[in-house]
Amino acid sequence: MQAILVTGGCGFIGSNFIRYLLTESGYEGRVVNLDKLTYAGNPENLEEIARQAGQRYRFAKGDICDPAAVRAIFQRERIDAVCHFAAESHVDRSIVGPGAFIETNVQGTFTLLEVAREFAADVKLFHHVSTDEVYGSLGPVGYFTEETAYRPNSPYSASKAASDHLVRAYHHTYGLPVTVSNCSNNYGPYQFPEKLIPLMILNAAEGKPLPVYGEGRNVRDWLHVADHCRAVWAVMQRGRRGQTYNIGGRCERVNIDTVTLICDLVDEMLPDPGAGPRRRLITFVKDRPGHDLRYAIDCRKIETELGWQPRETFESGLRQTIQWYLDHREWVERVRSGEYQRWVKLHYGA
Ligand code: NAD
Ligand code: TYD
Image (tube, rainbow, N blue to C red; front, side, top):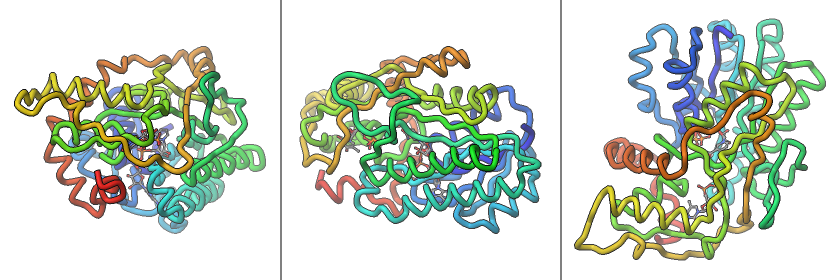
């Protein structure tokens, strides 16, 4: 691989991945980042890398749903691999407005696949980044394996499931060399503050209510974004073509425990003794419709086949992430002042 097209590289995971690829992975080729810059995409996430990497990094503002724009990039940049992150990614938004999810996640993935097929002679790999949410919801026991049947429950997960199926079909039907990864919930630097962990960190730091959906008993399996990036690169390099790899941190947490841990760490790292413990800010709000109870990944396949293992523990990763948000208040203000105006606040009054 000499010229990798990364889609959605200005978002949370995509920007961490490009930084990793250009600085730590050992990859010596070029990266072209195609991003539409929706509310979730911020080119500032890669400003420093863009300066350091020189000719090895190029940014193209554009929509993955636009075949002419995608085709022009393949042609101009001699793309020989794709790592596809671009998506609408927030479940709550998909409940209020599913249209954009079908457009970007389904139509956009289809467009990329079609162009990759046109350039089949050059394309060595199409890696598709997906989620464990395609498998649906678990009860109190059991794990998602690569063989688990798809049962997506939200418009977000249904649109990702559709895109996974298209990628698989392009391998089966046209022989496109694809790999797919299905990862659990990520956290870490540069995550848009609509998702649970950054939202709670910032609200706790600012003394605002912490809206916990339902009774806070839902379980998520957390993975630090740096571990996800290493896993994606391992799959791209060594994964068998046509295969799916589950990625997870063996780190299940009940939401309310995650929120109380964040409260306690913020108390320690940003003391505000006059105001009392941050746990006082926890506010139980109306549950998300169709809220999946539990996600938990069986990641033995990637561990045994590719030798990948998570490095970060939840405690240390969370501490590092909290410090990052406390140190990057200007970044936070800039992403918040975009079109997005604290969606959760609007809908839950919290
Ligand atoms: P994000 O919302 O932070 O970033 C998405 C990026 O895609 C943004 O930069 C946005 O501008 C760009 N984008 C959106 N629509 C586009 C379009 N039509 N054309 C070009 N660019 C477009 O998302 P994220 O959390 O970084 O997730 C990245 C990928 O990883 C997604 O495919 C998501 O489904 C998957 N994933 C995320 C998680 C998680 O916990 N965040 C877990 C597993 C898998
Ligand atoms: P989220 O970060 O939106 O990820 P996902 O829905 O893709 O798992 O939410 C993580 C969990 O936290 C999920 O169970 C919903 C819950 N949640 C809250 O309780 N309050 C919130 O304000 C948010 C954003 C999420």
